[in-house]
Amino acid sequence: MTKKMAKLTLEDSNEIIELPIHQGTIGPDVVDVGGLTAKGLFTYDPGFVSTASCESAITYIDGDEGVLLHRGYPIEQLAEKSDFLETCYLLLNGELPDQAQKAKFENGIRYHTMVQEQLSDFFKGFPRNAHPMAIMVGVVGALSAFYHDSLDITNDEHRRIAAYRLIAKMPTIGAMCYKHAIGQPFMYPRNDFSFAENFLHMMFSTPCEEPKVNPILAKAMDTIFLLHADHEQNASTSTVRLAGSTGANPFACISSGIAALWGPAHGGANEAVLTMLDEIGNESRIEEFIRRAKDKNDPFRLMGFGHRVYKNFDPRAKVMRQICDEVLDDLGVENDPLFRIARRLEKIALEDDYFIERKLYPNVDFYSGIILKAIGIPTSMFTVIFAIGRTPGWISHWDEMISNPYRIGRPRQLYTGHARRDYPGK
Image (cartoon, rainbow, N blue to C red; front, top):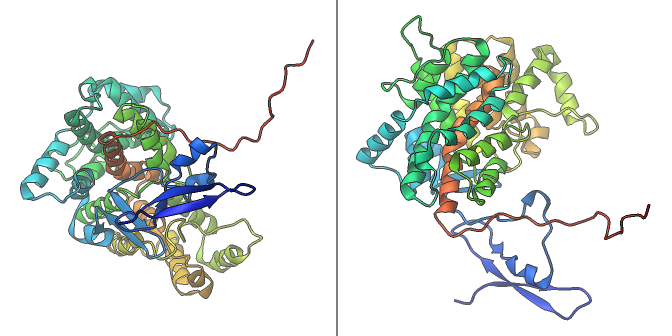
């Protein structure tokens, strides 16, 4: 088969540069511009919106069609038939586990959920009002100080153990951030609870009584984790890969991903939804804010509607909408003013021509924010929960990169500063 090539003609020159075109399993072809450097040229792509920074077999997104596949499996099918830990296994290993493999994997995660007791002392150094993401960045990075036995990134077994530890300990650390903020004692994980049950137990239980975890809320929590497990080469995943390309240890790499996720343009969207609902205040003001959202000269924007990648309905939002209905119905909070505003906004977005024509559908952040609020999780913890769910994606991309030949990441620039100039004489 003849290899496809792209031809670049340079203005004011007879030279034609041929660039190879690579084809993936599905998705757009990719022009390999690596050879341009030898010609003294770079490409210019702010935000890397048209640049494939790596080759990956983990996740595929078609934003125009509203498609999200993990190792080929549609997210809707995984949300319906799988669970978070099975999806973790799929992301890490490429295939769904059989019953024995799943049991072994779950057992491996279960017995890595505790953290070193000395790590608890770290929290004493943070003020009670510290943002939980600030604490999480530091504590996760500090894990490398405690687990020297899994820091050889060239060792397959070390990478596997590091992956287990990170997936298992993230909910423990996340819950510790919350307990520290409210002045309650840390709760140890329990080996008889599922992943999501354990997180809710460590968040809301106290030593004063036997833990009770609502199974509907646990299912919702598991689904939220699953729907956030990976999303291809987004800002935080790319950050993890870039840090990993230096040979940094996995705990440091995941900590860098948490830092990137902390940015309000990335992981803070569901928190922004609740802030918006609070700003609207009551149903009587909804029409006012809808008019503002339609006014291109007004800086106000409806948060939780539309998506940078999905130009169709976010496939995760379809699943989350059903979970949202189940949670609100179980908790009996349909008449809460905040949730009534959310329901009214959802109806408008799904029926109003302005939103339909622009495909500004409710996204996963809109529904997840409402669910987490209903469960009783404070908005400051929303991004922490995002980080817990995204950890298997981060570690899978890190492992995929380390397992194959790779180069240290080194983006180029278009320099627009001063040309060479001499230091002025005195």
